[in-house]
Image (cartoon, rainbow, N blue to C red):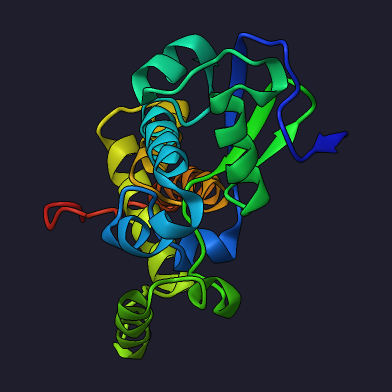
Length: 218
């Protein structure tokens, strides 16, 4: 698989897919969050942040991936497509790749993170002094991040409930993606729900009914 760090022009569409990372997906920040708007914005720039938000919206609607029309994307963000490889939209994609928010796959596909990692120390040092102080305060606050076991239990419970309501496996897994569960957690939850249902049926079939003898029988 050939990976590059910047888009290759000419192309009119990008195939957008999720770039999964179990650690960042659990500890990171949604591109549409206040953290990204306040602390990542000075690092990435407004065009990159808005692009990542649009891509996050698209992956919410199409967890399996989607085709992004580059001309339409440029128009919706208010940036241009002229200039070949130096077109403003492609420079925006390149900036996302440079800071680890996305990565190119070949010349017409891009993997995008659903969440952005907390700023590194060097990135924090680039912030204005007021934002640096605010970021330090944010880091000092206790965070209630659910453990992997808690996320797994919740995903399994939801998957089982949806299957009991008659949803097929594909629909259940896609809905878990929309609820921001990691793809590996969602897939395992569906498999667990299937196994749980099978175990329940097997257990119920193995129960031997009691035989009652009438008192009238000598």
